[in-house]
Length: 92
Image (cartoon, rainbow, N blue to C red; front, side, top):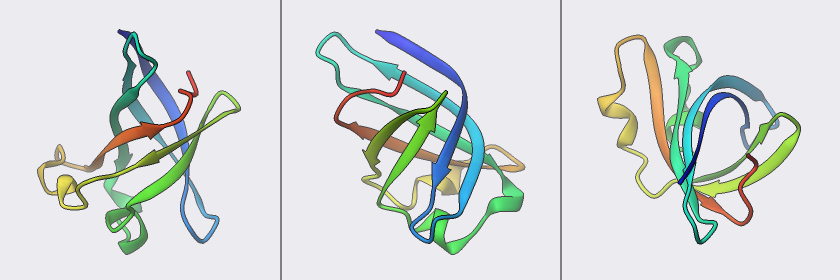
């Protein structure tokens, strides 16, 4: 597995961009998944209800799906964590 832990930019459906942290991994087949973590101050209905999206890591774009919109309930204190499954080529 190839891990990536670092900064990420998430684009919300309205075009707003959120900076956050990521903990992602790519397996031998090229599939990738992991979590995105944002400060709780960005706690918004758009982020909480997001089912698919686009992100950037060092200028490389990646698309993902989010299978469970209730995943943020177990976020660490002061943060919003969402779990994602990559769709297509990994951006890292």
